[in-house]
Amino acid sequence: MNWRALWLRLKKRLPALRDYTPKTLFGRSILIIAVPIVVMQIAVIFTFFDRHWQSASTSLSEGVVGDISVVLELYSQNPTPQGLLYIQALALEKMNLSVGVMPDETLPTSTHSSFNSPLDRTLRRSLSAKISLPFWFDTNRFPAYIDIRVQTGDDIMRFIAPRDKVYATTGDIFVAWLVAATLLLTAVVLLFTRIQLRPILELAKAADRLGKGLDMPDFKPSGATEVRQASEAFIQMRERVSRFVAQRTEMLAGVSHDLRTPLTRLKLQFALMDKTPELDAARKDLQRMQEMLEGYLDFARGESEAESIQLDLTDRLSELAKQVVPKDRLADLSISGVLSVKVREQSIERCITNLLENAVRYANKVWIEARCEGDLILITIEDDGPGIPKNFREDAFRPFNRLDESRNLNTEGVGLGLAIARDAAQAHGGHIRLADSVHGGLCVELSLPRSN
Image (cartoon, helix red, strand yellow):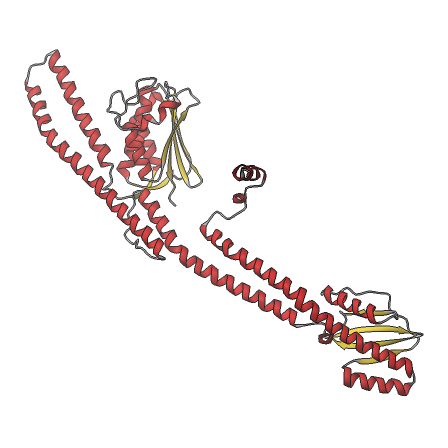
């Protein structure tokens, strides 16, 4: 039998348990601990009531009913007032039963259901087994006593028995202690589970801050050994990433510095030379080289050294749109909500500027919309240009990549416009997504975490 195929068929038919289980580690930990405890408590209670409590209550009920049958037999042998007095004294002293006779009475027709139904069932079975006369009982009228009545001819003999003689009261105490112990154990589990999960939550916060390019000066490994190992590995990873970025930035900065000097000399020499078509072409090539050099340096630097500040993009986005997009080509600018983010100012401005410049370069009209959606700020830039086919959209973000078909996003650049923009977005915990625009061109959606 193919057990794997059988399991896959059952898995498709049965509802997915993950839809009904907690999603957090804390919730799942509590579930893992709580389910065995609940199952164990139910098993203990069932076993206790089925074997101990039921058997004890049955024995007590049979004992009281046996005493009642003895009293009925004695009264049937001597139904005189003197005999009744003797039976009452004997029952009260030896059996702890209060006995009385109600002449010319009949059994009540009303029944009183007890909250503790096992007591009624046990007592009814015992009375039916040992007493052949009609009977009636009430377990609810008196809190500490049980009223039992038996029809003897024209009279009714009434018995008042203490409840603890018929019913094992230790069952309630046992259940109460069991519930109290369960609640106490659950409280202890909740407390210690939260304490154990706190280092994991701190590690998650530190990873989130690192993903947004924020510093983590107070983060220290803590908690269990495994969590400490993960925290130490995370700190080492952060140091390696920081060292790599610093080395790359220093290398590109050095290359840029070394190349700027000969480029400046060439510019000066070209400025002193007579203007010719060949010289103009050389000047354009020189300007192109300088732009490429600045692009390389911007991509390598990524503004990682700047500090994050609280920034409202409402006015800043409007200013950038007016600076980059010509007035006659800006079809619509819609900004709604408070666009409050914590970002590195120059980095996020470069990101938005690159996206706007790409739209302006390849389209006649540009539509800009910014809004808040949950915990995110969404900035959508649409155009009516040629767009980018779906199979080329991921390649458009690759550094130094230049598209040959459809729309070349970096015809005048070096293939770093979208790469710099996405790096800046991801450094702030955001993302850039490309899609088809309703206006026929490209839709670029920039999402950033909202800061309260």
